[in-house]
Image (cartoon, rainbow, N blue to C red):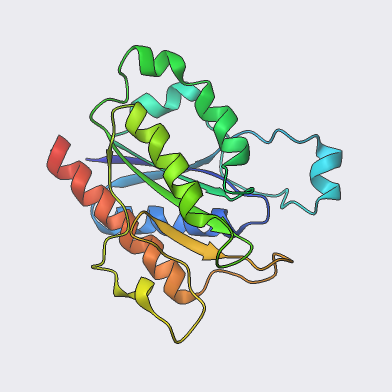
Length: 198
């Protein structure tokens, strides 16, 4: 059975919610899917002061976990077009890179930002750059998911990966369309991994 890891960092729960949708999509395609988060770098006091969601149930990933999966989908919130805490975690994977432990695996990216033009695609590209350096085959949110082209409502989504818009106060939750895009990408990644590793 194809094994998928959905690895995320989420300050306010938006990325966390979609991580579980991506995993659900992967399971719909017949894969097993685990959801894990990267360690929080903020002190408990700083995280609480920033109103971060502190009761996330996903276990914290270890670097060596990455080698155990056929596909890894990486998601994070956007911090000025960058990937914040996720960068620190991936920076520690140099040993896996040296051993080519992730070479040939399937990867994907998803992101969140406060505004429609808040750097989502830059963050997706940043994640994808890391995945490509690890030697992974990247699967985005292809246009088979037509929901990313909607103009009758505010919606995230790009051909590079599923996205959502949280609002400047982080009060907007992922829409049904954005969650559907996440499930679609999860299925596409699991199906691709099954073809390559089956």
